[in-house]
Length: 91
Image 1 (cartoon, rainbow, N blue to C red):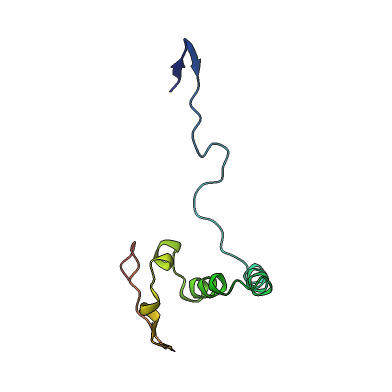
Image 2 (cartoon, one colour):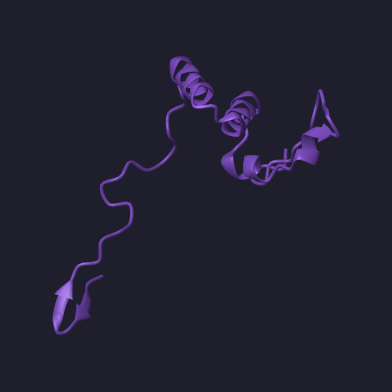
């Protein structure tokens, strides 16, 4: 839908114009290991832990950032299992 500004019309461009939309292809094993190694070399321990958790548990980003340390650890002990309910699927 065109908009008027000072008597001239400008076409409104959508935010996703020219972008690939929809489900993205999964990461290949080589890409996963490349990301892991780069995070290790850069000593980004937190990001590496979050990335490994996301890959291993197949969590969505919104579920991953909602985690608290208390969800997966008690004191200095990391739990062997944790239950995380996903926001979208509730499973």
